[in-house]
Image 1 (cartoon, helix red, strand yellow):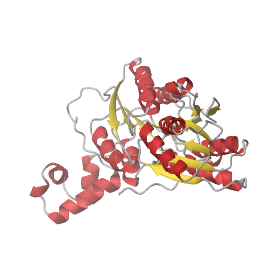
Image 2 (spheres, rainbow, N blue to C red):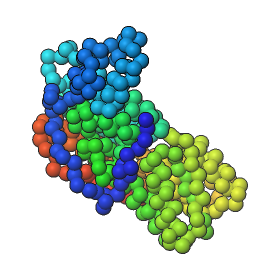
Image 3 (cartoon, one colour):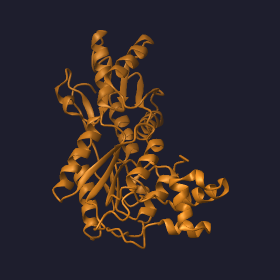
Image 4 (spheres, rainbow, N blue to C red):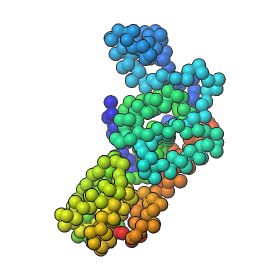
Length: 357
C-alpha cells in the first residue's frame, strides 16, 4: 500500500495545530508488541510468532488475520528482543533517496557528525525513487533494529509507513520539506515558494519563452508546478515542461536542451537541480548559444561547483548545514527527554543570482 496522506503537501502558512507532544525515550508500554497483535486477532503470541517466522506452519486463514493486524497496528518484529541490557541502542536511522546528489550526501554527513559528538551512530538507508515504495520496506527493516530515533527525507510517506512510525513511539524528524501535519518534527522549506520565487525572478527579465526541466520526484515536481503557475498567472507564455528520471545528471540537461533548441526554443529555464542546469549551459555553449541572452537558466541546490562554472551558475541555495544541525538538535533534545519548542522549522532559501539568469 503506497497511498500518500493527503495532508503531506505543505505551505507553512497552512499549518494546523501541532501534534500532541511525544516522549523522547522508548517506553515499554508504548511500543506495539507481539502480544498486542495476538490480542487483536484472538490467538496466542506463539501463533503470531509462527506467522512471522514460520508462516507455512499456520493456516492461510490465520495468516491473513495476523498479517492484517500487523499492518493495522504498525507492528514491527524486534530483532534485538532480549539481546540488550539497555533500552537504548545509541543508533539513529537516516533514510535518504540517494547519495548521488550533494544536497542529501552533505546534509546526512553533517547530521551524522553532530549526532556522533553526542555518542550516537547513524544507520543509513537509501530509499531511491519513487521514495515511498522502498522507504516502506526500509522503515520496517530499521525499526526492527530498534533505533532510538529516525531521520527521514521529505514528508511523502505511505499510509503503512506512517502507521509503523507512530507505533514505534520514537523521535522522528522529516527534512527537506514542511508539513501541516508532521509525523513528529520537521525542518525544511516550502518547495512551492521556491518555484514561485524563481518564476517572479525570471519574469522580471521578460524572456520570450520559459521552460521547466524537472526530476520526477514529488518535491521537484512541486517546485516545477509552482514555477509554471506563477508564469501563467502573470500573463507570461505557458512554460514548456520536461520531466526526467531521478536522480538527475548533466547528460540529462544536455539532452533536454538539445531537444528544446532543435525546436527553436530561446528563453529562460528553471531546473530542479544544478546538475541539469550545468548540462543545459554546456549544451548551449556547444551550440553557440549565448547565456543568458539566448538561454538563461537557474538551478537548484547551489552545489559547490555552481560558483566556479563558466559562466557562473545561478541557483537556489538552501542552507544544508542548518537543515542538518537543526534536525540533529531536535532529535538530541527529545532523546534527552526535553521538549522541542518549535516542532516545524522553516529554514527558507535564497536565489543566488550569478551569470546564467
